[in-house]
Length: 129
Image 1 (cartoon, rainbow, N blue to C red):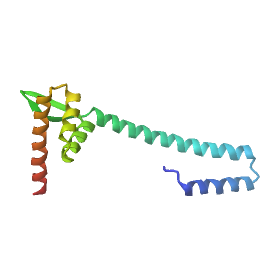
Image 2 (image 1 turned 90 degrees about the vertical axis):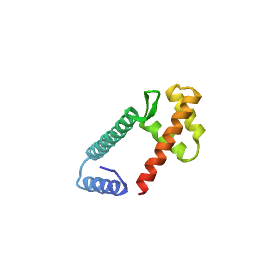
Image 3 (image 1 turned 45 degrees about the vertical axis):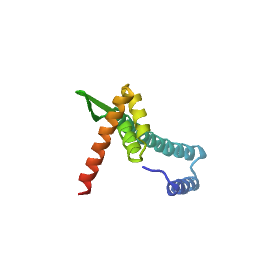
Image 4 (image 1 turned 30 degrees about the vertical axis):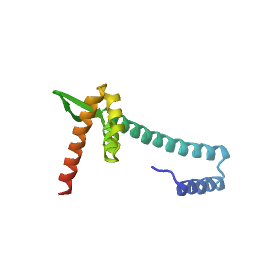
């Protein structure tokens, strides 16, 4: 449940109604605290779900390509970073990032990014058809 302006206005109206019904200030305060704690608990659950999704995204490995019979993979976030760099024409940055991830030498990392670039272009052309 999202807590927005209307929810706060409703909570305020309910508080006024309770006060008018001769409820004690303490009971009104307790009710308000209970409602707010419930909202905070739900919000914490949503945050935990979002963090779990991000963690899963980090853990999932995506194949970049293979070189000399060795398959190289990166996590999802790195995959999209490299793909974005390539599409923006920043191949040198993509090579540097891939080198830092894979510990390959410059020549090998450049070759992998070149192959990956060809693969991206090929997939892009197929999608346009």
